[in-house]
Image (cartoon, helix red, strand yellow):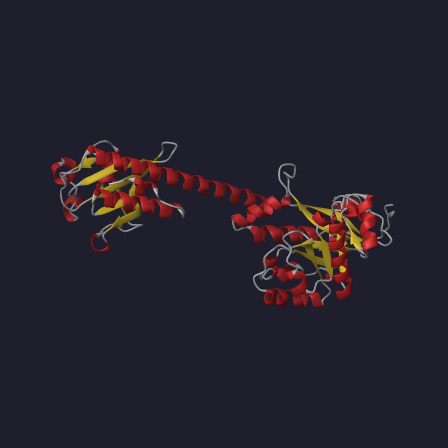
Length: 407
């Protein structure tokens, strides 16, 4: 019989792969029961099991004392890994389980992680003796134990990595280690300072940016906590800025339908706040989003849609949420002064925004030529390195309300 099927665990979770390997080897050896156990605090815990449903006495999650199990004595070298008939071994014959199940033929091999530390064992047994078993069959079980060990070790590494990432994000949240930088936004027509966008910054910004931090938080289920922390830190700067200026803050659509959403803006002058949603963030239900936004928008909160004009944009947010501001993605702005296609798209979006009463903000403006092209197109607001980099609140509060318009 070909053994290729033993290696074909296929995709899926680590558990599915181990189960497939265990089932294949049990059937190949014609054993009644197969299982993978883990040694935990002096007990043998059954993690995986396979056998004929009507005659499988092993239950996943069940446990028994190690010293009452074959696995323990095999792992210590006191019992052979292959037994044609368990009652012929003096130690096995002395264990009550040998007679209660009963155990006839038995094969067991230790299971170890890649670093050599013990995990447990892989075992197969039949209720009756089997004289046909050979060392080759034992070798097959050892091979399968190696495969199971490799799968479990990979899963263990993934679990440890996940826990390390969770601890890293949790440490940031507990220490409130999110700094906020404020980038100025100017009115294109006359260069007047109109607003600041609050941007989250983390301690290792030189190695990875905020997007990576928020993405990692999402993978460990702490994205809501991190986003609301960043929002709270951002809103705290509002009082320090000139009352004539608005503050733009970022939040994902999923947070807007959170029970924590409205409370996060308690005591904040909403007429000065612009809530920015990215165009490429998925929205499960626009009706739910509109309902959540309605009370705050009625009290003055303005809505901006970010990343409009990027390759992934669908314009659904713009069409279904009726924002007050449309923010053109920086990929559309880059080199717009010399790119007819970019200019045509920006003109179309700006004309659309004008028709529905939206301000149009250009992000990522870096050259005077880009600024002039955007002004000619009719874009009403602009931000970018040409006009001002993100800065600490102390620097932002001292920025004059007017600035020279780039030539």
